Length: 336
Image (cartoon, rainbow, N blue to C red):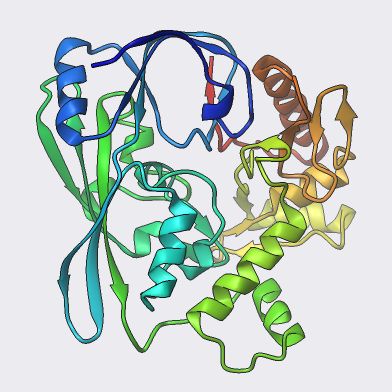
């Protein structure tokens, strides 16, 4: 076990925040990770660093989960069951699946991060959530060092949520995720207007899963900054769900307010629209700010601190509460 001292985490988080890990170790196998956990329980887990905002140096042992590998567990004429290790890059895994003509995750193209963190957040985009294709999640119980397994139902998936963000937060390390994908007769989800519009622009009437992926990639690239060029963590806030009564009152003042019905009693309102309407879109404060094309994305233009960005997030939350009476929930994991 090669523990390094005083390692910068700037290259290990997509916000590009330059904080220091007092002690750092990268593990590349399940058993190596088990050995680390046997020796040290108080650890800070790091995977793709795509859904976190670091606001200070990390005193705990930082464990970089870098376990790679994809295996086929079973397949039939119509479906394939895969197990993918936690350290695999999510988007590269999506592209690999497309090359094999495996369908089900094409709408989740270009989402940053690693496979091991996808169940924690229950990543989703353009009408699809990863819970729809996950069969099980495996990991290690930090207290005992033993292997643990969760079925889809045991993960308690919700909107950008799971048991791993709540009851099991800090209690286990996810090491692999298993998926059930289609090999033919793929169910294509083009329900989001942006995908249909992009396919129409390209003159594609009968899209393949690759066509949908390409459309999603083009849409995301037109709206979202590349973390390799501008530090960010994608959508910083969740889209809030409010009562229908509340929405109808807001509609009187804001006739153009968009919404997505959840039930007869509730609607989802785009957080990006709220933030833009409140005047934050494109605002820059020195080295940090709100992205000019997508108000949901907070960015680090160079040398901003995590505290700077978190303070901006709190200001946005307060303004949205005061203006619309809506509580915005942060989607990114803020490490304080």
